Length: 433
Image (cartoon, rainbow, N blue to C red):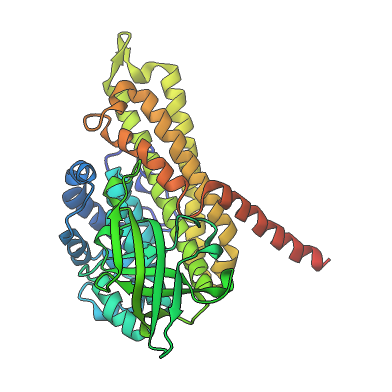
């Protein structure tokens, strides 16, 4: 069996990059992935990494960065397949040949090298989770008017699902949308909390209640910042400072019926469709952040001397590094397996088959991230307790852990989902016996 071999890429820190960057063969990647990886890394190292600390400390990003990321041929690659949600023929930038989910994995993984969930979320996450419902289920008017602007970096978008009273319990949201007697608009009233990119978003993909209780009464609609009654305020959170996390209030906002995404009362289905892709993105990001913690600790352990010898010469330090990397690489292998299924299954097949395993992979990645952030901090010692300096990435990522373990489905909810999916599959098997 022949597998494509790629030339070594990156700094060469053992386990500091995925195995296919080094001496290992992989069945997943082709020349087009290799070329795109180099392109994305060059952009991140020139346009992102030199400014990451500054942006995180200021809790904001320059909005022109969106357009730069589009012009680099990257931004349209974070909304799944097909490229740009099927609107690629209307864009000046073209996709890599045979664009697939491994190209998107490369984007998220390479951007994760900046070591800031806030910067990554501030630039990519709103597009990654807020735009796909518009592209996949929105009207042609919404796709043209909103989708193209966001894909080109000319407008920004966020996803508004979580409320002060409903997080993982999406079916019980309270934000209401009441249709007018004339049938031309909805009046939306409610609150959304922990909304990524909210403070600078032009558009909001919002879960609202248009019907009765439970999942059957939920719709999705597109609300625009310019509509009277929309108010956003920044939230001061533990981590992901540059993400623009916001508390959003809708006070009797008049939303045209044309801004309904898909069919009325079908929103829960669209949200669930979006979740697999969102959670897969969390896995990619969290595992790269875990890898960054390992890489930073590995390099520091070679520089730092204690008791007359390099820190790396102490067996306890080597044991910590070994425990970190064995978990990171195992998680990456699971992630690539899921990505391969996403590439080879239909969207209908993957929506059912991958919900449980993706939920469990999210748990795996965030637990590994938390473990590596802690162990890296122990290796850095006091240097990891200071914002900036040698331990900058580790200090920042330690604060970002909870932003990955809770949003997108908390670890507890994800574990339960994974087992419940297994129970359903087993029931089907049993019924055929």
